[in-house]
Length: 338
Image (cartoon, rainbow, N blue to C red; front, side, top):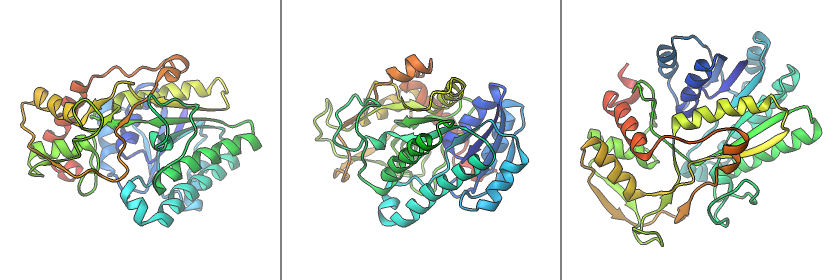
């Protein structure tokens, strides 16, 4: 297939480009490089020995986006491009809604104009809100607790309504849990702007000396060790899920949502201990106040993806930590070293 990947230079996007190229697909990437580096795509080509096509394009630039569609006979789109920082979304809601939702609508217009009917959407476990009890299943009612999450809920609704109006479209909504790790080559990985908002990249930056210690937000939750439980999934397993979703689109499934998670939650302290075990690096930490909105426990029921996509998360927490450390130790300053 000729596959357009929006946001393909980002963390999950770049890993997915590797798996798409390895599976024999032609890859065209559009990315505005707001929270990503073009260097990641150079390394994707290095890892695979295959080439891709890159356009520095913002989805809000309708003419530039249409030009990409005009230059390629596309079979499918994988849509990652979005602003994604929860805290920032609370302080900048209009920017998040405009970028994420308007950009998605412009993408849909371009797909319709150029006859592209297959889409895989990068959704999130945030669409389950705070009222559903784990394990989380795709039939649960969706909601959100912040503008970022609401933008994902709204985009899912846009796709469902679009399919109702134009049933020829096939759309798969992939609800990620907590992507971590890096490609085992150590050449691509997570390179967040500023202070990491997620656990494992913060742990790796403590280990490499960027930060003095890890803050653990609360140890009085109703969990075995008092710290939050989350469903961590290796980014390579996640990327492979996108290739499986593309294959599913060939069956004309309409609109379907799938959880991509392991179904096995780990606590913050379990992640820290796993990282220390596989790397031999000590991770100093301190317990601080809870963060508003953090749920005690969140994890997936991945059985639908297991059965309908023939997809399974196979990489262990130790592998996630080892691969994350290989990336960070080889690239202490991320892609800025190049």
